[in-house]
Structure formats: C-alpha cells, structure tokens
Length: 89
Image 1 (cartoon, rainbow, N blue to C red):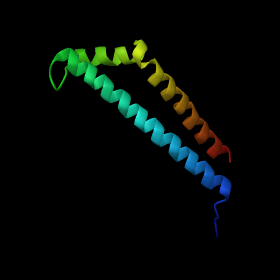
Image 2: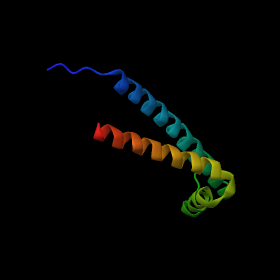
Image 3: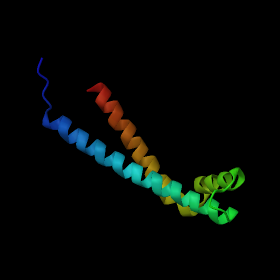
Image 4: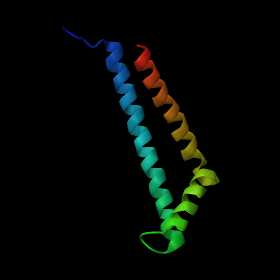
C-alpha cells in the first residue's frame, strides 16, 4: 500500500511545526522570566515553594506578562485547531 503526501499535508505540517516552535519559545521565555522573579524575591538560586508560587501567580495576573499570556493562548488555540483539523482530515 503506497501512501503519498499531498502538498496540503506538507504545508499543514510545516505550519504546525512553526506554530509549535514559536509556542515552545514563548513558553520557555515566560517560565524563565517567572523563575527570575522567584529568584529575585527569595534571594537564592533555588527559590522555595512560596516564592515560586508567588512568581507563578504574578505570571498569571501581572500586567507585564499580559502580552506573553495572550500570545501563548492564541498559539495554544491554533495548535489545538491544527490537531482537530488533522483528526477530521
């Protein structure tokens, strides 16, 4: 049985891969920024649970991370949409 990939599938996989790479970059950048906040608050390289929890809460509600949250949300929806399209195809 021969299976061939059409140009639609190739283009679809390229867009899906690019969206995932961008999402991964933004997610790690956001997590490292939250880690930096926790380290700055605790004053140690390995912040405790309280400092980490405060940093993650700040990441979820602080205005300076609004742009990151927005883009991560948009890209998450895009990736989920790609998954639904690939299931329906």
